[in-house]
Image 1: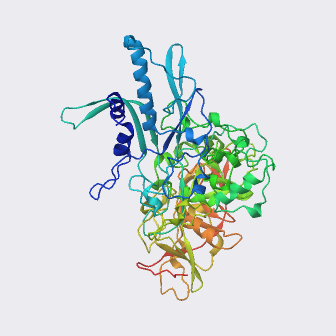
Image 2: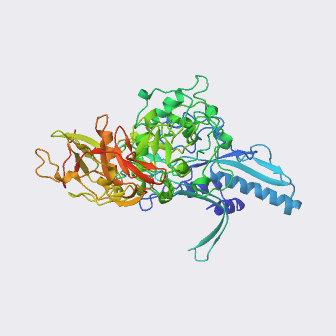
Image 3: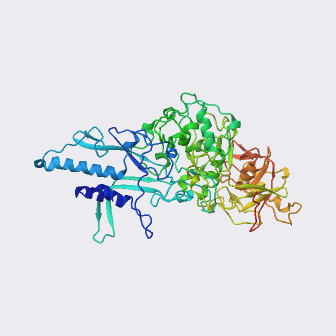
Length: 607
């Protein structure tokens, strides 16, 4: 395509006509998506080799029929200088022709080449050591659509751009096509590939539910240990922070700063460092940016956002990406096996972990994450999937740098409507709906997550498994017992059957399921069982009790580090003590809250 642009310029073909026909074709009923999706890359012409600050959204990149306030307002004087890739290539083709003529056809007269300022074609050419250079900062817009980029149809479900293949742009400066036209070879000058957001939520178009999308790579470094309070030096009341609405928390952390600086972009982000000046790879280490003027994790996700109107102020509608809340982390973690390997929070080999180095030696692999939630939910233990806690302990000091993961709201759209797709003030829904049926809490999971997060319904106890096993998944729903059974009677190995070192000797625990003898009035003789970790997390989040005091049947995958999981005021792995000699020497006793899968075809209440 790009080679055609250059040839058309050489042959004096009308460039505007070519652009309209090739890039913006209206299509037909047979071929409704004629054209190219190219408006997601905006080029800023410049002399310097540093990354430019975003000047505001260009008029040409906006989707037709979307209100200006979605883009931060109307186009600015500076944003008018942004050009698309097509126009940049045409302009460079013209400049190359002039340079070629001066060098090889001097008899036809000297051609004037405008340098050091933006020329009539919208690019800026500089001359360095006899060479002509056209430099740009390429601004890559977020992989999010309000309208279909090729048909113009309104987006009625975020599933059309989430959990999808990367979108790519190849700027090829030369291309050879075979005589039969069936194959081609291009030499790429620039190759831009952008991953789509991922989500663990159901992407069925008939499921209308607010969700969130997560980034694949965390671009924020974790080596900020010089600060005494590395997460934040600001104060937000715990009662104001939520467990499940990270964007609401993000706005609170921003507004907790000094009045004269809290909403200024320059307070947080060094725009000249907020991007890449050389190629990067698919490794997590290559996706780190030192782009922060204020090195605190409470504001780090602002590097994923933009000054959409170029006014230097952080407006509410510019806060699109935000630091995840603890419940949003839990949904990412519990869904780890159902999202791409690069997007998973923990990237290490759990089998190699040792108790003495746990968890500090594995933070670089993503063992712990900072959340935006209140102080006793500030740390998410991604290595354990279902656990969370606070900072300020011997294992999690306040000076500890940790990874973060930023997410974006995916508002509930569907049923043929497109009004909601631009909304930001939306709380992502939980993985469950809670109902009360005959006194029991019933949790509905059906159709709320992607299909890989479900297992087959069962009436029997679950097989032995760890946190990464398919047995640790969801059914359509569960019925929760009214009360715990035998509080203080069971330890984790009894319930999950893990093999471990007990006082120096290998012990193969015999798995018990005390729920097989449990019954309630009116259950019709139904079979009950011990919950898995995923279910235990949902139970802890749904029941309003101070201390749940319940074990689950899920083992931890490395018995030298952890043995299992328990729900108390949170979910954690503090189920025993490990001796310096390298073995477990005491086990805590807890109760069990039994559950059972809802019957096949169960009709959940509509309240």
